[in-house]
Length: 165
Image 1 (spheres, rainbow, N blue to C red):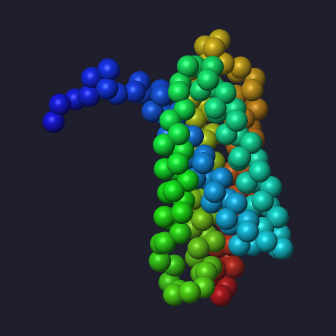
Image 2: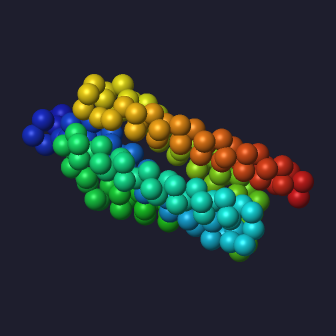
């Protein structure tokens, strides 16, 4: 199979940022759905707040892409959205109802997504080289660290609940 040429493939930074945008889209959908599942309890309230924050964090990513001349590939964002929907089909050990395992696995996935987002901000911070607002990237890295910490506390609590059942 022939290697793609520069004319047929996107530069690595374009692929990297569009993949992060797709991940952010799927992550927002997962957080929103988990918040709806737990609507009315403390977990739902926290997840709803995090969903709002993570959704808001997509705007700076899109702005960075614009600043760097990286076109947004909408099909990748759609794939991120669709990936979250397909992820719902995973077996959870129960035929009809949600399993406590679902909460733990979803919180782990959410945390991995936020850690990935933090890695993206760190990568962009290194690449900033005067093209990007380093202070804004530092703020976004700090916010992602706070989100990961909250998700870890929620995950730990869900894991304890799972084992207690």
